[in-house]
Length: 97
Image (cartoon, rainbow, N blue to C red; front, side):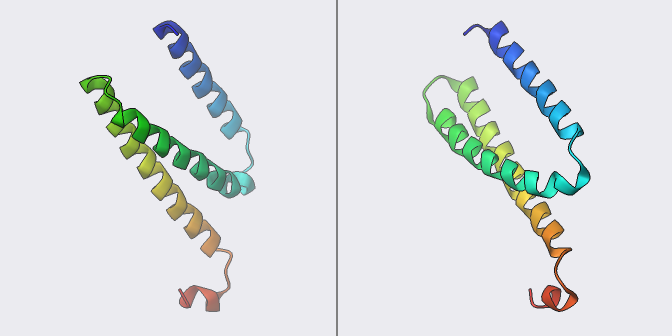
């Protein structure tokens, strides 16, 4: 695929993702975030594969950067999800943690 084709796919994915998330009610954000964390976990595996290829220094740099950013997304997403779910626990359940 050419660079122009890949750039168009990226721009369309960004636009579609923005439009989908913008129209989601606030009560559904936590379940969607849990699903997005699973997808980001798959992204980490793909980034490891990309970082390990011998396609040159720039490709390796972007692979390592992708691993770093996807890991931050997974860890941060699970921290936020855990915090949101702890809001639904009773007062006695919070102290047990």
